[in-house]
Amino acid sequence: MRASDKAYAALRDDIIEWRLLPGTVLAEVEQSERLGVSRTPLREALSRLTAEGLTTTSGSRGVVVTDISLEDIDELFELRETLEGKAAALAAERGDAATFEQLRLELLKAPELISGSDPARHAYYDLVGRLDEAIDAAISNAYLAQAMRSLRVHLVRVRRLAADDAQRLTAAAAEHAAIAEAIAARNPRLAQAATTLHLHRSLSHVKVAHTPH
Amino acid sequence: MRASDKAYAALRDDIIEWRLLPGTVLAEVEQSERLGVSRTPLREALSRLTAEGLTTTSGSRGVVVTDISLEDIDELFELRETLEGKAAALAAERGDAATFEQLRLELLKAPELISGSDPARHAYYDLVGRLDEAIDAAISNAYLAQAMRSLRVHLVRVRRLAADDAQRLTAAAAEHAAIAEAIAARNPRLAQAATTLHLHRSLSHVKVAHTPH
DNA sequence: ATTCTGTCTTATGTATACAAAGAGGCTTGT
DNA sequence: ACAAGCCTCTTTGTATACATAAGACAGAAT
Image (cartoon, rainbow over all chains, first blue to last red; front, side, top):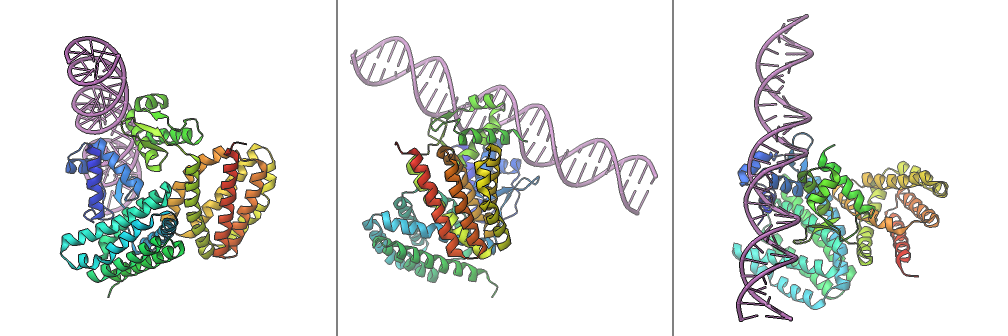
């Protein structure tokens, strides 16, 4: 693995997992010493992070970790609804029904994974990831898939804040199953509607979790 | 201006203007000598181009200029319709009516610019650019705006192929005016429909121009 | 003749040295 | 005492030297 890849992956994880908080300045020498690479590959890593929007080069203060506020989350989900709604509709038009029917069946059994121990919960996240990948593959549109991939980086960051409880995950699994069902039924409008519903529920959950109560 | 910015701008222009054709390998020493910078800033430029999708790092062959075929154009416009349609609708909800009414009036006078000499045609492209910027500003969504910006890079590349004639530009100006009118009227659905119509016409024009006849 | 292997060449990946620019503090003058 | 200017230190930007890996070509062996 190249040193720049290593530095990129480490920094990306640190930001996504909120070990590097928004506003933190990523000085080149400091980070290169911390990660054990020289400045050259580290700079490349910072470039990639900035291109993804996880960091910004803020004038003369160097590279800083970008903030992600509640308003940002609204904007993020607005774009997400647009892209994923369209993607679900396209997947319903173009995808392979059997693939999504299989995913639907697995999603219906997901509550067992969620209520289980932590490794099983990982299996649930993997399952949702496979649904995303299946949609990506079904839409046959590299540009749309790329746009969604670049969004997901930010979404993972938000999800870390959401503190998903078993109750929410169980509901989300049912919503995902509804999306898979609509795609398997080759019903674009239904697939889009199911996606819209799921995203609104997710957004509400995140916002409730962060509203003072 | 930093050397890396200079190299980035030069390469980006060369690719967009089709002076560097798809498939061209951008060897580091070769390009750094051609552009008069050293390899370090050139590598940063290549990173940024690759992040934008204008180049890809193709295994062991180094960085190559990405191809953009007719199928790619279909995919590109599919995403474009999704994003710009949503943006137009949001602009109609949130934008300032007077701004778009002003743009509409200018667009109605655009045929004079188009039929004129080449510098005036530049004025027309500027006008369309201002409509894009006004929509970007009106939507109040940094993520959506960023997604559209990253799309426009590819679109400029396609436009260079389209060989826009005066007839098509005149029609396009009218379509743009219809979009501005719908936004000024604060009618989201109409704004989205006008955008869909415009993009379909643009796509048809590009495809006709590249179909053997 | 074909294939395998070794070496050589040429590319990219990395480290480090040097340059330039900016911020902060200290000193000096009024 | 306060302000202004200069100096220094720190940080990023650039160049270049070195390492490493991959690919091609040639030669030899089967």
